[in-house]
Image 1: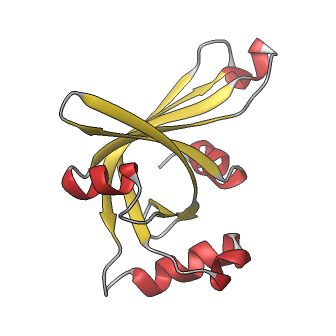
Image 2: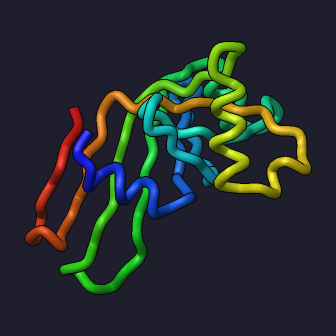
Length: 137
């Protein structure tokens, strides 16, 4: 993955997540940690939330991470699509360590960890020139 995309992801901590049930989309804001070795976001969400229920029923998700600025030449942000699955025995320990390292307060609460594995990322990076797009894969 292009390191400019990874650097942007690591610099931020909040993503906007889109899920869908039938013809009814939903969005939610989620704190995340990025796992380099998995090339995945780690988020926490209960199954009682709408986005948790919808991701459990339909793991295909999309999302954005944006840097707020009014200066067009400084605009940066990513759009992604991927799969959101609950962490399992093989990855929950690493995911927990990554998430609690980023958000130590999470150690004090019950967490239901999920991994979002992007399969497509498009980054708008106007600092490289107006309208510059970086894509992965």
